[in-house]
Image (cartoon, rainbow, N blue to C red):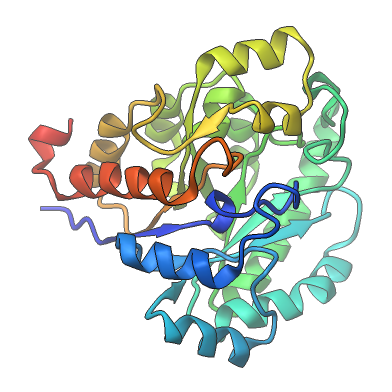
Length: 301
């Protein structure tokens, strides 16, 4: 019998957006923490309104009886040395480690267009074996360092970045070692044209963190046909919470159960809170995941 030891957390994107501060910019962090705890979430990922001093963060989360899930790190290993990246990550790594987080969300932002007005087809790519190998080598060394500090890299495949598609993830996983964990994001891989279950079946042994993001396919089609930027797609509602889109979360949770995944399931769906009210959508995402996690395996399949 495998053990399905998971906790359900949330990213504050449901209330406020890091890439688009105008979305929920007026919402106080305290409201997000209060509502998240009331809904039933056990922890939060970091956002731009959280304190960055370890003790201050610990004190704040303790007031709401919440755990620190993890936190996004904007990495630049595609363009800078391992030594420079390690020097840059130390404050963030300390913040995570001293607050009990065991994974770090690594997002490659070098040359990324996720926050720019450029159409998604202009995303950066590694066009040679040499570039792929160089990048993977740097990532391996960087991940070895963070893991030595008790925090494993959870590599985030992401729209608008070097590692976006299923083929990109396959290539990266083949070139890196076990120190590099995979952050599985159902929404991003669907947007990128991949199949979440195929990706899970292939790389589930490396998955150390899970972002539960649903999609609205009609918006994704518009984004592709009209050459929208990533932020245009977000504003227009490409993403939503589990249970509100078309991603097959019952099968995803069943796969994770069968494998004995241990870690966090994180609701993360960047939307405009004026159109998608924060509490209602965060509650829907939680209730969807809770019912799937608590269901007997045969019912969750």
